[in-house]
Length: 535
Image: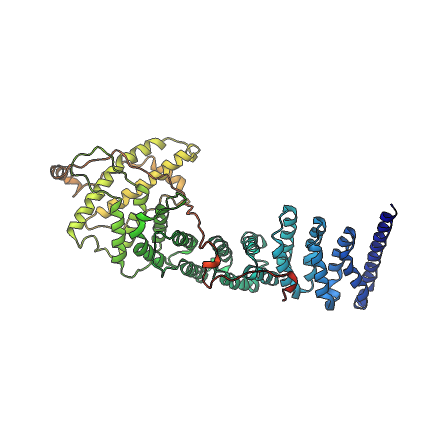
């Protein structure tokens, strides 16, 4: 008992001394700098009892700005508290960290660097304190905080790097542009570009979200810069290899990040050209390890890119590849009666036909320069159009009379999108079946939502039946049908196979298994110790 009492008395004496030193410093006012001895005694309290440590944390921060010569010593003492075994003491010290640079901005980067490492805290309550301290630091000195954060992103270990990037991607919006003004934003953009020199897929996604949040995402020049970044990351100068999962995952991710920025002023021709020349010839060979329909994902992206495709070099070459791929999904009518219904992949055809229709405007003579090719293509168009008529009718009947609430169900939503798909194909086929082919119709891709979607869905259930496409003029349709039938019996499939994979989420792979394969090569990122980081 005597030993316990002695320790307790010593602790009480130390706490009393702490309060005494606090009082001296608080009352010193303009003569604070003369009381270095008292401040040094406060610093030694970080080795004391739990209560002494908590008090020391508060007192160190309170008088930090008055003793610039002791700044490094004071920060080191405070860091001891951030590493304490007692979580309560760590949380108190972390909470007080931003106060060290409230009036001493030259220390912000170092404190931000420390807080960046503390993001690896495992306990949720402790991590919440770290988040709050980082947010506080960002608001008082955003430029310094960003500088310290990126010191860890570029030089720290992978775990710290990952958490720092995710923090910026999720928290910057809450901080807002009122705080992240031009100067810190310039630094943010500059540092993000450095990080992009060597990133994983997840990191690329987060960094692009950060850059899109900056002014780059809201100006034409900035958006062009973001598109240029995605083009560089996609490595479009490299030949496409269908067996390289990393390569086509990277391509998908880069296109996805670029899509929101394409417009009448920013065209997508580089991506469109690459997909047509490099990807389409290998499309049927591409398979995904996770089982998703990556072929359809790529075709959807191609169709969305085609919306804002500018003038492309050698358009005939690109259109030829589109044509070659399209006809693989559009069978010729069988010469004899068959028993097996051909599989008509409407989703794939909508994507390819839309892109073909858009790009043919740049080379309208493509379809008419070869009469035999045009004749065969029209046979395919007619056969496919006949194949979807029954399907369109059944879809309309299925959703006709349904209330808006009923149409929200997953089953009915799939039918609505299927109806949009088949109607889009029908519209495009009519254009292409003209003599000469026309490219005037405007459609909205079935998986893309518009402000008038609900009205369109409701209206589509009451539209008139589409007239089946036939050879020649309508006035001679019956005659021509009879003549054609004598040459080749046309089988009309009762319905087609509609892909249920209508999600607009294209999935994300990794750019590389780790940064060892990144540009610039892998370099160790040991963080060393906090005390060795100087700013």
